[in-house]
Image 1: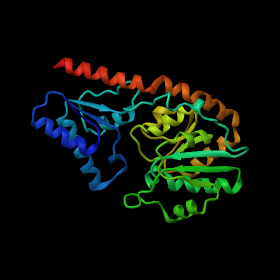
Image 2: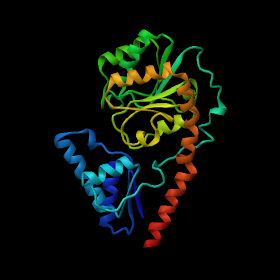
Image 3: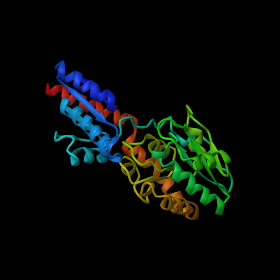
Image 4: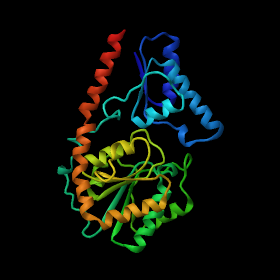
Length: 290
């Protein structure tokens, strides 16, 4: 068996495994790039995914959103299924445990945290602009940015960079090997990405007891139940993001309820041992077929 996961490795691995007659050829789609592209680039990306699926004997979409995109756009007609509730990694609940931290945030200051790459398609331009508006009317707010720039691939707008550098409630921490202390300092995660497969950040934050503001995209909408452990807003919409952040500040009881629901929901669907067992069971099934 050959099992691949990333787009380039998947294309090369599935073609190679097909040509060398490997009996079981599995590819997992952890996310799709082409839904947010257009023109020739979109067609090329769709074609590479089509070839990957053609050469594979089994296709695993990381979540229901990815599955629907693959089927709706004719990338594959093979029977495909999501393992468990989706996600390929799961979360170690012993490692991401809020009981290991003093979760007392700055007194009277509502703290939002973002973890990930600081690039345009993660919604950082909208996030920084929305927070700038928020901080001007409520100075008892702060935004923790935990991540790194990719200026050569997907740079932020100059005005966004300027606002980050000026501070005004925004604290930049760069790439971190351990993000748990930053979740522990926050009241809520904000993750306004344009596209995802199944974002581990939202799962990790939930395991740490944080409610989340996420966009209505693949993965995020499968982790967050709107109004129960967070809220879901349209992507690329600064005004909706601003309104959601205002709502979190103005409705502490609702936020407390969502926070209380966050970790139990993650534990019931994405605990690491459960996610791994789903994969082991799949391997057992497909190998026994041969």
